[in-house]
Length: 99
Image (cartoon, rainbow, N blue to C red):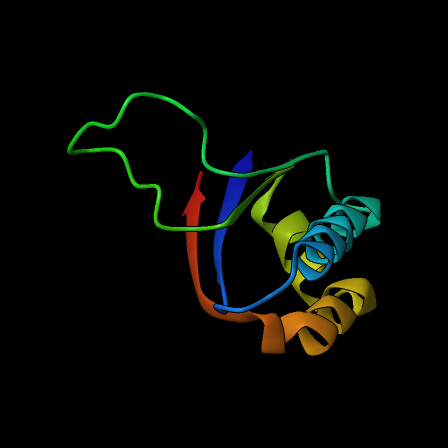
């Protein structure tokens, strides 16, 4: 199994509609054939603690059965289109892959 977690910091000045549309675009990545499960959300309202990071706007977690399935996802046209169509909306992206 591989857990692919992506944290997007969006650019300042985006409207609520642009942010909502971005979240909907992220959710479309769940349709890629090798995705076992997907979760999209914003920082949780948990109490602040020194070890908690909330410096992102949208989090994406994708579960794959294998690294090979992850690699198929990375090259899938839907993933490449998502990047191309949305890269101007984010300031920063951080990815953590856990096996």
